[in-house]
Image (cartoon, rainbow, N blue to C red):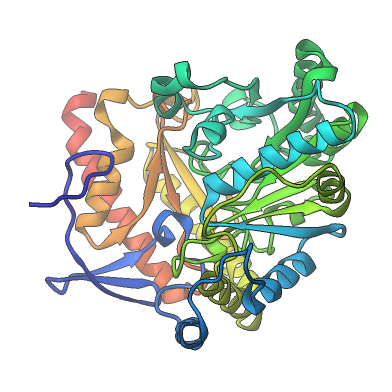
Length: 443
């Protein structure tokens, strides 16, 4: 009997230990963590340098409330993150997770608009589908119906524009006009809502769980930045999943000339060692808010010294081990191997991603982009089969959370060529088994 409950009644084996890219349950079965948990454990499990940094901090203090003390750990991590962020984004607000980081970004954006005399601006445009968190404020900008629909009476839904899914629309993602086509949807939505009411646009530089590692078309991010400037709205980059080296750069937005005004991070900067996230904002935004009376926001564990000590050690590992470069190298090989699986398995309709944020989408007809019947629950069944075989991967419903199936393959940034072989072998075997299971249904 368990007294815990989360999404459902399903049970899993009890975790015993984890090292590097591997995890073991209490029965001794080994699993390869092919999704870094929920795209969290960027540097792998049980890194000795991070554990040592945590022990050292625990010997000094594990908590210091921000209204009572400043801490060396939080100051050092803030300085390091500011140095790794785009020029001018020097103000850091620590939180415990991605949803808190997004909530913080939305609030500082709103307070900035009030501080500069533009209090009529409050709307945040986001994309459909997208994922920005599960708290009510973050959920209002999330475009994933199964998660938001039950709570709509409790919140104010924010306006959405279509995510740039060129592959589904039959457009060439390498054509500059494709990027401009999708970016124009932002300008059109701002005009529709009334420019005087729009405060910000929040975007995942590379799509996360809701769109399955969706890389934007050429020119999209740069044009989005221009539109935000033209209308005087803020650009918020949701780097919760794409940050901390996951895509081959420290930040996902570093792949384009599209500097955000605010960015949010979590997952990879704590790398599973501690709950940790951050909002990083442009100096002039924060100064305006502080001059107007201060930021009306806070969390008990903001800037926790133990969490920040762990986060600083994680960032140091990413840099000292060259993990951004390894994510690029192994990520290119992973995409090539996934394309190889696509040639073998007809149900793979698309392969996409950047660095070690990759995914493949399952379809009934690759040419027509027809999804598999949703009642087959392919996204869950393939994950379950892989888990039985000792491979952990992640999945979601591609098309607004209602139908369509994609599998995210996002192993830790320390992944080796040998680990990559294991991942592909596990996926191949899992897809083969699933194909056999649905053969009768398809007929």
